[in-house]
Image (tube, rainbow, N blue to C red; front, side, top):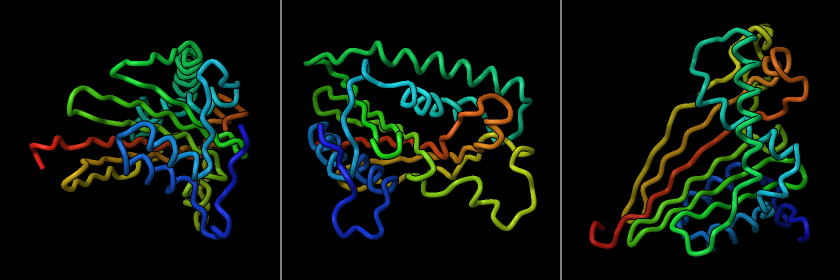
Length: 213
């Protein structure tokens, strides 16, 4: 499959915002897939996820395990090892046609960012969950940018900075978004010198049944 680049003339191209917008605009998997391809994401089969993609996806576990406080280097290292083990299991996932739950994976070939879509459909109920692991080039911000006017050493700060949750709804969809900025320097010093994921975002988009609109 050909590499998809930024749309022509898109001087303010923002991979994170474009992907999140796509995830929050459709619960139909075919429509969502087309939208993600249009903004630079390439579909990938789970079995073919390379080590870089697995490591990126492993970073999506960290906001679930680290709260707002700090943690010991030992705790950070053990949590990262567990995350890597769990993420590696993604290669064993199978795409089952006709299932109520569908699972799709995307990568940005230029950067190595990863996006997973889980789609559910049962009768009138439709929902898509997106999980994004963004490298520095695709991330809307980074820990370093947040500390640009500070003399604090990022290695002395917590591994995860949680962003405020956001939610909205209209006549068609209910939407929620959570995000976290990852402290790359702390993760590198405490557990993995090759850690390079700057931020993680999750979205949940639920289509309202016709009768409730």
